Length: 66
Image 1 (cartoon, helix red, strand yellow):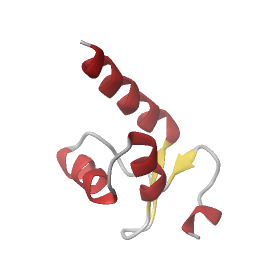
Image 2 (cartoon, rainbow, N blue to C red; image 1 turned 90 degrees about the vertical axis):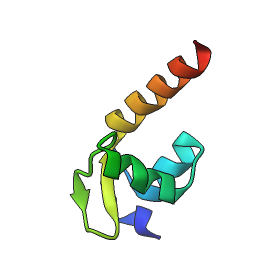
Image 3 (cartoon, rainbow, N blue to C red; image 1 turned 180 degrees about the horizontal axis):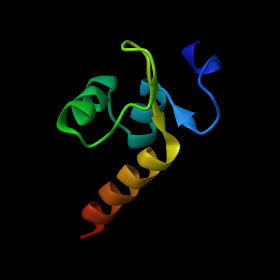
Image 4 (cartoon, rainbow, N blue to C red; image 1 turned 120 degrees about the vertical axis):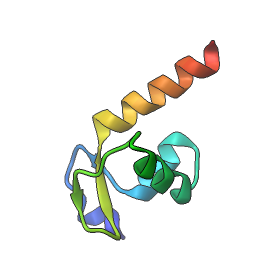
C-alpha cells in the first residue's frame, strides 16, 4: 500500500528487499552500515533511489561471480 505514494524512480523498503532478494531487516542494516542512503519518505517508510539499488545489486552480482 505504501508503494502508491512512492514517486517514480524510487523504491520503498519492501521493494528494495525484493530486488536484492533479502529481508526488510537486511535493508535497514544496509542503511545503518552506510551502503544504502535514504533520500526521502518518512523515518518509518523511507525511499531509496532506484539507481542506488541497481548499483548495489550489480556490485553483489559482480562479487558473487568472482
